[in-house]
Amino acid sequence: MTDRRLWREPSFDIMAKVLHVNWLYVLLLCALAAVGYTALYSAGGGSPEPYATRHALRFAFGLVIALTIALVDIRFIARLAWPAWLGGVVLLVLVLRMGHVGKGAQRWLELGGLQLQPSEMMKLALVLALASWFHKASWERMGNPLFLIPPLIAVLIPVGLILKEPNLGTATITLILGGAIFFAAGVRWWKFALVLLPIPLVAKLAYSHLHDYQRARIDTFLHPESDPLGAGYNIIQSKIALGSGGMWGKGFLHGTQGHLDFLPEKQTDFIVSIIGEEFGFVGTLAVICLLGLIIIGGMLIALRCRHQFGRLVALGISFNFFLYVFVNMAMVMGAIPVGGVPLPLVSHGGSAMLTVMVGFGILMSVHVHRDVEFATARDG
Image 1 (cartoon, rainbow, N blue to C red):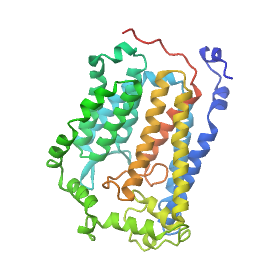
Image 2 (cartoon, rainbow, N blue to C red; image 1 turned 90 degrees about the vertical axis):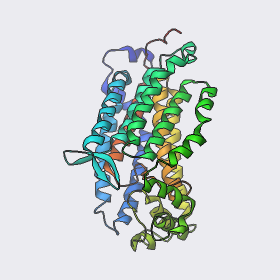
Image 3 (cartoon, one colour; image 1 turned 45 degrees about the horizontal axis):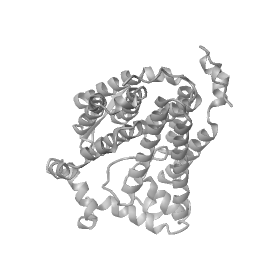
Image 4 (tube, rainbow, N blue to C red; image 1 turned 180 degrees about the vertical axis):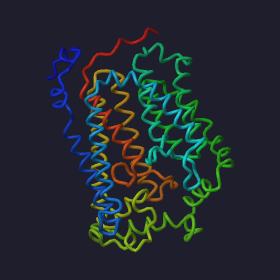
């Protein structure tokens, strides 16, 4: 059993922290990255270039960052929560002013040859900021509507900036993520009901103000067969690839949709289609189980943490990972409109990899420092 007195020492031994790292969880992350390497090797036509090698290097770099963050005292990370949120807002503003335009949207910043997507980093900063706000709150204060106004503004500002890029999918995910933290912190359910009631009216109004490509995505989702060679091409080819894999798949490097270039964005958004075609239902189910273990592992870290800040951070990061997985897989299967969300640690992409690994580093820091003492709750 962990000796709580150890955590009160001003300089906790670094080797003791290394021993407290959840190495089984690290192994799960490595296994998922190996799945990504295999799929990207196939997407590259049976070659480690141009995708698989970069994926392995990015993961190795990200793992070093994650393990380094895991050794940082979670209370120090808590002190950086609101500065990180402010930095994220500044980056989102910079994106709107000088960001890189791609596929009709302005979402990336070019920094020293590296493309960063601040909206992804903002989700982590938002989790930290909301956890920092709520972790000292008493039940009496949680019942005060005025107490909820600052964190609500903290959610709406980045959501509004992300919508202006425009990036409807990430803005929606960010809003849902913020709502999940509110719920986990103990906000009463009836307050969520008040917010959810006008959604049908707002959605109808919002549809009329969407960009043409956004409306096309929704129309394609509802009727993909109406434009099989245009807007509906991606999702139709994805379904063909998944269905053709059958129970056991066609075999590694034997997928026709991917290797004959019928499948678009096969290295990023539709990487699951490659897995489904070559490894079938069984292989895809195994990957889903691996993803599920990572999500459940994050939830268990939250449950075992003795301080509210760590619990909220671990739940937020785990739920953010779940949203990545759910949206990507639902998109590939045609259950929701295509939104450009990668499958974390599997799809090709540097910005998403870095963001996810920083998040896992913070999650592991929560585990390593799960018994530290924070300040007592605020008075109501």
